[in-house]
Image (tube, rainbow, N blue to C red; front, side, top):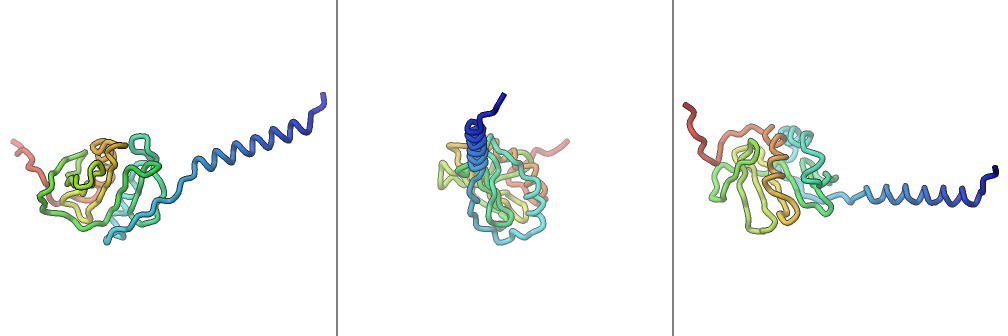
Length: 160
């Protein structure tokens, strides 16, 4: 049985083209973010190494700034560690996982959440049309909780 060189050549070319296109589909541009003032704080490194690879089917992407992260293409969740801590605010507060978060809805449906009572603070911006804020914050809580909370923004019931 003889092999048709033309047919083999076409098959190899098609295979190479498919592999190249699959590699390109996996490539996404780096997300450009501004690092926070205290991004080089060792606590931010503790957070960064514990961030999940996926949030609600949104894959983690490469960013160009220290202590930052992004998920989704286009990005639907952005994170920056090292922002100025917040100890008093008139913004509403929610607790997700073990972390208290201030909720800034001024740019809704894009919500800004800032960890409360932790130094340094962590900022998370979520496009609520494409991701659930509560679900994302709960998934980020194990990493962010590595920064010790020195205050809580909600009263906790007294233990008997």
